Length: 199
Length: 109
Image (tube, rainbow over the protein chains, first blue to last red):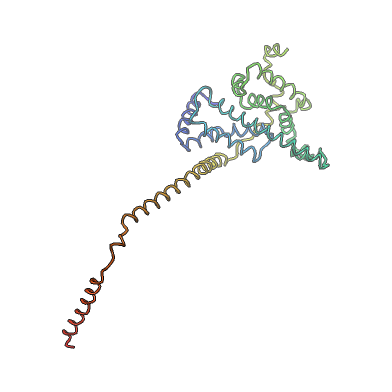
């Protein structure tokens, strides 16, 4: 998270971007690219062209919205709100596409289990690799509903306060805390076998 | 129950889960990410500007053509006033013949 000074610089950059300053835009992208890319990757459950394209689209939205940008909250809160909107829309459309694909696979008589394995991009060999714990964590997070996953990400990896998360999610503080409570229960259940493994 | 947990400071994920999640940090953006984003922005801007440019070009082309036709129409000589009378033709021919005769005289022919 940034300091107050950094926020001012973000706002200054946004003012310059509003005038069409591409150099200011490049600085803003470089400053926040890991935050946005990381969030998109965590929400989509991996890296790849989709993640890169969506992360780029988020910054393009920032460019387009710059002339209307008003300082109402921290810049990162606004940025993560745009990220949340686009990611949720993408995830929903991908889910419907995947359902359609699985339905066709079933109709064609293909083995659904194979289809599931292909869609998650995992093989048995991966399970035995040294990355097992990290992958199990990613898998457990990926299985969470969108809202819970986003709340966990913002809290755990972006270090956001619940008030900020509530702003990003467009929810009340109580609703966000309830989401976190449910996410914690789900993650504990899915990762119970790994407790103590990270020590 | 949840309220009690919140009051007890259990609003987050808890130490154990936080430790587990820390083992899978989010990936960083690729090194070329900013450059590619900027390139995409420029491509998008060019795409947006493209059709307008074409429209403006067509407008300028049409306007230029119109002005050229106008100028041509104004400066074009009135061909109807270029009629030459027979007398003028005879006078010109006579002048040529006379000139030829004078030349021959000077040449002693």
